[in-house]
Image (cartoon, rainbow, N blue to C red; front, top):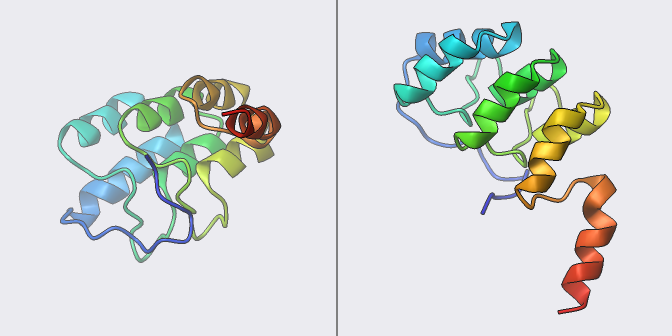
Length: 126
């Protein structure tokens, strides 16, 4: 499962240019370019020291649900805090009312604030 938002940045070997290009593609909604970089092993959870933000949060804040969902389906961590934005992917989806991303997260069994009460209730009944 995913870690917590308080963990440190992942150590990765990635070309800064490749990651920056993928980040910009996520911001701009260029799914094909994001897909290209993911297929070529660019880590969606890396945060470049000059930017300190995640492609997932960038896609959500820019309203590119298709890109955000693709990133989530390819190991983007919705609990990882984007340092520059000071929010996780879940928090960004809630803040920007991105219902497509929230629905996707819930279908994956990932609790969001709206579903937290029912998640906790089910967990306590075990």
